[in-house]
Image 1 (cartoon, rainbow, N blue to C red):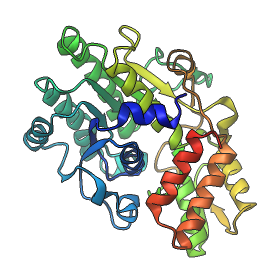
Image 2: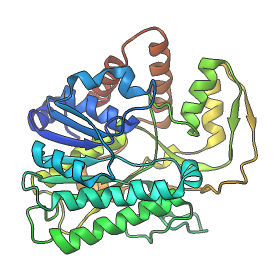
Image 3: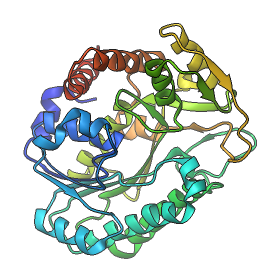
Length: 357
C-alpha cells in the first residue's frame, strides 16, 4: 500500500468530482483528497443538520460545493461538463435498508436513476479517465449455506435498498458493455462493494455504532435489533483507501482487462455478531441497552465478503482490526466532545492509518 508521499504525488491538483460528498463517506473522502492536494468538486443534496460535513467545515476548502439532486440530469451534466473532472467517485445514494422499506420508490429513483444519469453524462465528457460507482456488500443473493461471497457470485436483493443496488450493478455493467468498451473509458469504470463501515462522524439513524455513540452522549438506553446477526465490520478508511487505489490504477491503465467489480470487505477476524460490538464498547464507555423485536423489516442474518481479488490485484487489505477501528471511533467521539475540530481529527486518523500506526 502506498505511503503519503506516493499518494500526494498522484492526487495533487487532480480534478475530482464526488457525488454525495456531504454524506459520511463522502465527507471523509473529501477531507482526505483535500489533504492530498486535489481539487475537489462536490455534488450532493444539502447536508443534514449537524452531520460530519457541517462539523468538519470542509465546504470552505472545496474547489466547488454544488447542492443538487442526482436525479436532475440536466444540472448534473451541466456541472460535470463545466468542471471537466479527471476522476469521479459516485457515492450519492439512499444508503439505509430500513429507509428503503419506508420510501422504496424514492430509494429506487435515487440509486438507480441517479446512477444511470451519471453514466449517461460521462459518455460525452472526454476529460474523465476513471470512475468508481460505490454500491454495497448487500448486492449478493443470500445463500443459506452462509458462504463467503466473491465478485462472480449471483446478485440478488430482498429489500428495496439491496434490489436498487443490484440494479445499479446491472446498469453499470450494461453501460460498460454498450458504450465504454471502445471508448477512452475502457477498463476505467468499476463498481465497488464494501462491508459495514464504522468511524467518527457517522450520525446516521438505525446504524449500530452511531446509535451506540448517541446512547453514550445522550445517556439513553440503546434499542438493539438482531443481536445475533453477523456483519463484516471495517473502519471507513479501509474502503476509502481502496477507492483511491482503484481510481489511480484505472487512470493509469493498470486494471486487469474486463474486471469491473471489486469487493473491499474486512478480514475474517472482523466478522462479528452485533452483540459482540455492543459488549466491547461497553468495556470502554457506559451505556445500557434493550433488545427489541424487529419483525417488520427483514435484514440479512449473515453476510461475508471474499476480497482476495483486491488483495492480489490491488495489493489492498484492511489495515485496522475491528477493535482498533472501534477504539478510533470512540476516540473520535471523545475528542469532539472536548472541542477538537472534526476535520483535524479525521486528518490525524488518516495520517496515522497511512503511517501504519
